[in-house]
Amino acid sequence: QEQMVESGGAVVQPGKSLRLSCEASGFIFSGHGMHWVRQAPGAGLEWVALIWFDGTKPDYADSVKGRFTISRDNTKNTLYLQMNFLRAEDTAVYYCARDTWRDGHTTFDKWGQGTLVTVSS
Amino acid sequence: DIEMTQSPSSLSASVGDRVTITCRASQSISRYLNWYQQKEGKAPRLLIYVASSLESGVPPRFSGSGSGTDFTLTISSLQPEDFATYYCQQTYSAPPAFGGGTKVEI
Image (tube, rainbow over all chains, first blue to last red; front, side, top):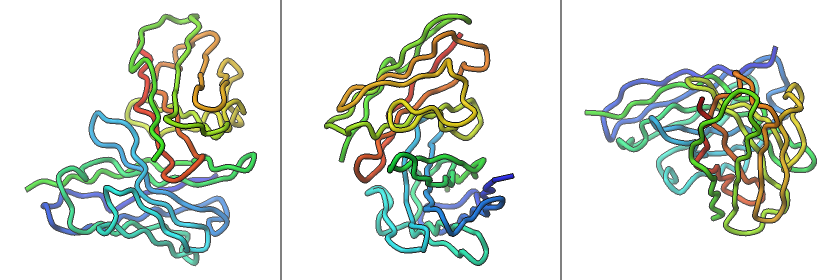
């Protein structure tokens, strides 16, 4: 069945780095754009980053631009999020989400289970 | 950037009730509006796309309407498994922003 499994979440100190992974299976990974979305404790959903199906055109929320890098390896069916210069406000559950076009526009139609990142000294 | 505002932020309802949630965009987004359901401790689930199209496997008691700046999600007869938080999302232009969420409680 189609699924995505995130990993890499941890407790890290402010200013440190962390890399998240999202391994996909059960579908043609290279045929979909992919997103990272995060959710701080008790808060709503915040879009973080997007990468196109072929690894091009990365885009970022202003809150992470210049600190986070999204990438993918289609040979490994894996999406990544490199997070540098982490701040307390980056504390959240991070989800990867699959982008599927329906009726000509983007939907986030499949989500991983999430991985928790806690930034604390 | 386009901002999405949902109302109410929470509501109390009973099984069998008709529930309506509103989402307003800060500028016209045509019909490029998705709705998601999130249960406690779980990942979001796509319910409705392009304002009114039902995602495969979603019960027909869920429906969406609207265009331009004003949209609604309606649950025609609330079931126990529908108690969750609902989010709207615009995909008209980057970044694909979410609304603040509406928590549907018993």
